[in-house]
Image (cartoon, rainbow, N blue to C red; front, side, top):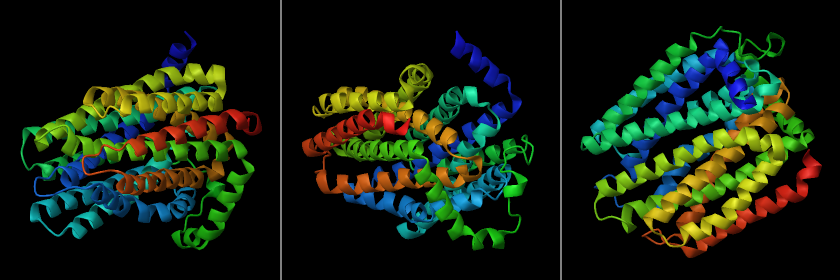
Length: 420
């Protein structure tokens, strides 16, 4: 089977395996850290969580660094990517440890958010760098498969890390600080694993690298304009990013709804709600894995835009059918379907961006990609805060999301020839 043969070839590449190991450890730590944040903000017994509180937390953690994300991309195109993985993960290990200490000290919420925000800031560099470095260790013919395996494996690692964090949280009461420390250990392991890669292997090319930080900062504005101009000239990449941003918005709105349903609508105990949320995360992870298996085959036959159109059209049909009962079982089925759809569309988008964008611009374009992800998620949380009642049951929100998915499917279908 061609896919199986190509997969075996990929896994024989030592540089690819090592980069994959860095991703797995780093994103597993992300999963642990994100669950620690969610449980501390949403499921702490002393907190009366509302959609507005969740939206505020997301805005504090994501929006400020989303606004400066493109500037991080300009720096990423000048710094050696291996060094970004090394020092970025070391810094996150330190910051996660500090966040654990703040939880134990019961400091005001703003101190906790500042520390957590710092971890999220470094995350912008690492995730964008992992995507930008992938074409340096994989040939073009196997890039679609690599994008199925690598980011999806990272997402599954994040899901596994989140599952481990849920297990610790459920087994030990008031263990948010311990979960944070677990994340710090995994960040440290990711940093040490990056040392297995040669320092200059992942690029960017020496001729494109400014060794002085001051020179890189001075050219940030010019580099940002250049990246936007480059993206404007690559209509395929721009179209894929626009579609993925809308789909991310839909996913974010539904995430807030599920959080509120788990917290208030389906259970009377915080621990039961946390267990349901953990199950939803696990089911969604199964959807991510299925997407990794299906996407190389479907992209080969439909093209990336055709597959994205199928994903968004399927979501438009199934999301209201499964979401409107507001019951646990249909919602868990929806979590699987949306995990498959969202990850399948992301794999296709990653491939379009990587193949349509020049290596000298990949860092800043993937940082822009990351910014769009975060802004869409924060915007979705804000809209959900306005539409959701306290128990999370909102027919207008479910129908609005379905309409947006349908609009993306129509736009991709009509614009397919223009972008390919």
